[in-house]
Image 1 (cartoon, rainbow, N blue to C red):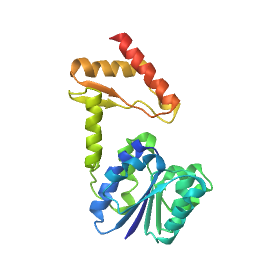
Image 2: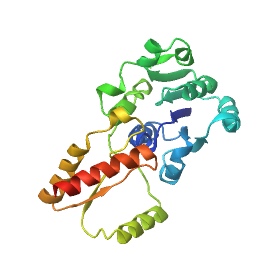
Image 3: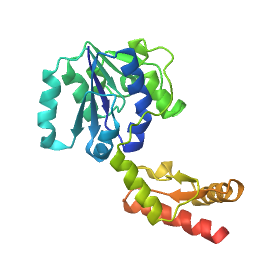
Length: 233
């Protein structure tokens, strides 16, 4: 069996898709699982051990070779976790007999919907991202999948994380807070983040680590959260 999985969103979405990938590996241990991811997620490739092939998609003409690779591989199933134009093109080129996506594509896009022939009656805004990803593999008769994240971090990544902790002098238990998003409307108010951070620090006696992307938008948001938190302490 040959299965194509498409997750071209940001690294957080890819991580939250790993329970679905692990469930497919358990259900079909001998299947060839091919995963298409965005270039921004390339650093996570060593941790994705449940797949046989990973296609790191870039943009424009640089993806031509990968599109042809998908066209040649004769997939039986394709699951699109992304729902954009690039993922629809990959799904169509896969030639899979069953091409799965959320029903939202069928209702909202006149052209893109023709890339698929199986529509799952779930939408992301109504459920956690993990549960949404698991719902998209229901047509493959995957029973009782586990919602546990599945990453096999290589030794080099663990060593790098340890070095970062030492550099930041994080010796206590800690929680990582990642408030950023690619979309401004998904930002939570800095005052609320500051309240959560202070609650974790004082009630649980735990170190709080703020992380974010390198975009000016996210960095500005992080700076406001940090300033508000320090002001309230």
